[in-house]
Length: 484
Image (cartoon, rainbow, N blue to C red; front, side, top):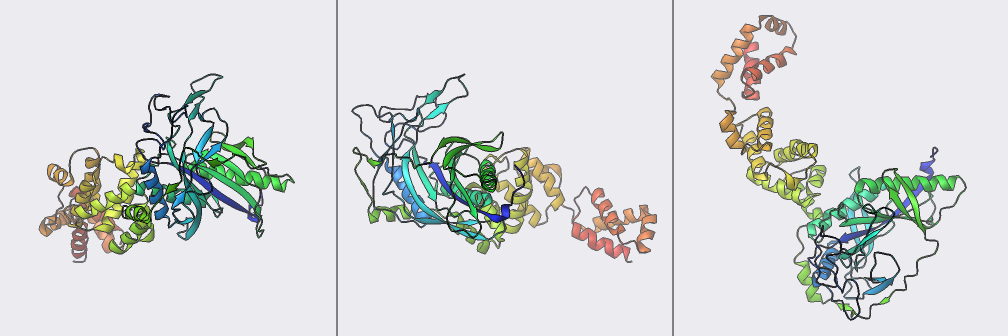
């Protein structure tokens, strides 16, 4: 694409997120929802709408939808209706999808997100409704053919629709990550994007800065990674601006993102809104939710990321940034709190280790915190040994690597390898005197004004004691000897 005047344009983005609910059975049948089963082994007569069968609503899916609605301060519609959304697709066995339209279970809500510069923005959520998933078309295993796997047909989803209030790809990713964190805290969705448990459609349009009227939007379907969402939206914004600046016209259509070519391409025209011929499902009565039931669900909501972040800041005296990173993933927050408890409350030191050496080691081996070979208790013990000066920060890195390699706890490794810090003044002083005696030329240069040689002597001392000398004591005793 040629160079564009991007500053003259404003992008308008709305997201539709499909989150697969973590129920053991499907939305309207008792069929299992386990991932990875052999194709077409988890599709019952109800899922396929065979003659004579009737759907029965999954109570747990309803509870999960209510829980989500309460967490975003949304209106819970105490009467909601299931409708048939009629369209043809090869992996839609019924010829319609049971969804919600006029009366969804969750109405308007809001989600607070943190942007790259640390500022906050509140994004409106239009609605969140329950619906069943379709099956899956398989292309890779068949040459010139398409296979159909109906295992996913009938799996419960909650579709979360945002207002068109996102203004950049980065804002969209911040919104998605915040939503992803929230549903995992609520334990209503595992958030596994590779398995399709959390995927989104992005509605993208552009308009001249200052304009009030929205531009024509294109919908990018089924993007299932944060990185691809950002790249797809950025490409689509540039494509539309290039088209408009060249005198062309954006058409309303559905597009697919090609990650290999990093481009979106047309999938089908959507010049007119699809007529899905929604009508209330005659086999499902309206859903009525009592005040008492809503109150019961409200009591089940755990501490959410926003609340946890405020607590981490006040209780552990952490910065906005540190608290935000630590609470983004529920398992990481749990790991941190366990480590701090074991470390006798040394929160800042524990933060440095969790966000520093530990995160670096996990990233290097492409692991997440649930796969970490160093337990939270062992890391906390390591932090405690640094805090009580049993070991130095430098030796701690040796201990950490040994723990990572499965050699035991911090205390066991310190004892086995003889890594306890030397704090005996007389022993350190004797080592320093030997160093000065063996380096007369450098000693003379230091006393002649070459102050940088102080670090040279410290390095020799740490090497002589194999890093076990207390650095503060080394500095104090060395200064005393050099000034004598």
